Amino acid sequence: MATEPRAGDDRLRRSLRPAGVLALTLAALSPAGSVYVTGAAVLHLAGTGAAIAMLGGGGVVMVSALLYAELGSAFPHAGGVYHGIGEVLGPRCRAAALVLGIVTAPALIAFVALGFAVYAREVVPSLPILPLAIAAIGVATVIGVLRLRTGMWVTGTLVTAEVAALLALIVLEWRGPARTLGTVLLHPVVAGPHGGLAPTGTIPLILGTIAAAYACSGSNLALNFAEEIEGDRRVVGRVVVWGSVLAIALVALPIVGVAVGTPDLAAMLSSPAPIAASVRTIAGPVAVQAFAAIVAIAILDHVAGATIAYSRFVFAAARSLGGADGPSALSRLGQRSGAPVTAALLLGGAAILLTMVGERGLLLLISGELITPALMVVAVLVGRRRGQTGKRSFRSPFYPALPWVGLAILAMFVATDLLDATARCSIALLVICAGIAAAAARPATRR
Image 1: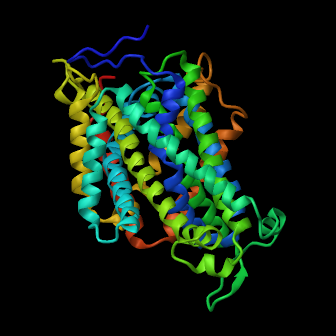
Image 2: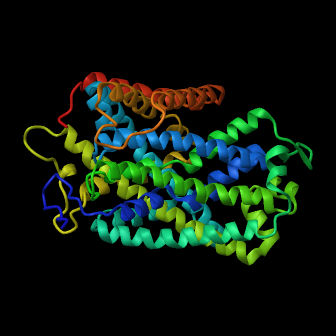
Image 3: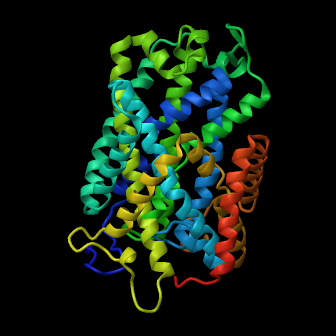
């Protein structure tokens, strides 16, 4: 029988079943939020080519999930893959991944909280955005310091409502298609510059595919619960993979359904909120308000799930960086909850401060962090060759082709970033320099 963590201990206890970790992971990646926020961007970029983009983006995410599953299950750690990166590639690479995670974790929570505020205003327009975002982070932090089973019950309940809403959206869009799936795939169109529709070009399809990959990603957050999941190491990898499969299905089917089921494509694609426009056309304004409320709840669940997951990362980072005197305050577990309380409070406080940066600045920061995924892919290449991964843990297929495909995908993402605004490249460069500086300053970590 699983034991609870002891107060003041710096070791998490195995108390979660795979289904519980899967629910926490779905909460942390929020498929409903991805559909309405990132999915809208995919439709704007690629039009009905969103169907093609979702197929490509889903493929990208599955490649990433299989590689994360192999490295994360070989070295199960509450900090995700940074520990495995260090075991395979050395302490300098571990320190770089560690610092990059510390920088981007609160930034992601702050970004999602601002997204929650935007959707909450769709329900009550008079609500102010910044106080709403701060309140969302506060609620998420409270959930993050509860006993893990309590937090899992709260986020799991919200995820159930979220999935039910997505299933309703899928039925709504697919029950009376306005065009065939073949037409959507073979003849994609986008909103024209002067109204009407125009054929979707190659570059918008590529950009849409990248956005679709971001929409479906996030199942690797399951690795942050690797020390708490019951079962052998292979179970950890399977949860990551199944999390990706569910996320891809729950995100792709509604977005493709919008392309197939919306009667007036020109009006939908030119709308600032294309999915809401599609729902309004098919089901009326009341349905739009109902879905907006569900999406706001889903994004709040996203903030809570991400806080629970990343508090494990901060806890593990503090434990790794701790000295010989024993666990620091950040790497101690709460007396009653057995949760990393101080780590969650610090994470929440940092996220609140980062809301002042604004959505655009936060997006530039988190989208520029491609170093850790690159290190992860290289670690799988090297680790499999040395026999450090894929033995008694999850084993990804198609080695070594799959890691090389992963590196090619990352190269495409970097090229796209370089073609984007100078601000994005500058912020990404700052993040990279922070990782390099940390690696040079602290060449070794305790564990």
